[in-house]
Image (cartoon, rainbow, N blue to C red; front, side, top):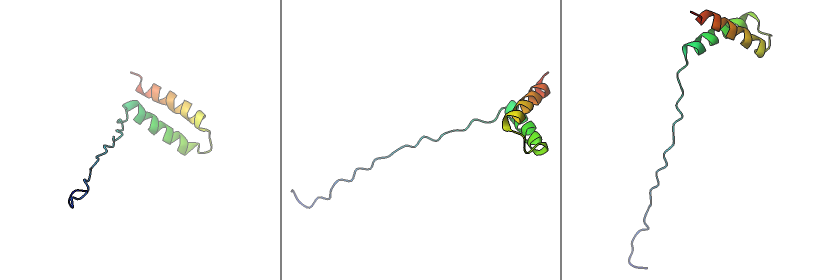
Length: 64
């Protein structure tokens, strides 16, 4: 060993990628609103049945 040199400290920087979320589309917002309304009216119905009705209502509502 040469002298009283302190051991070299190596600082390793790890960059963490932040997962960005995409903003909800107009369709997604309308679908969520329709689904929530159906879920409130029919809480015991299956997801598939409510989703089908919510998507139909959303398409009808967004139709020009």
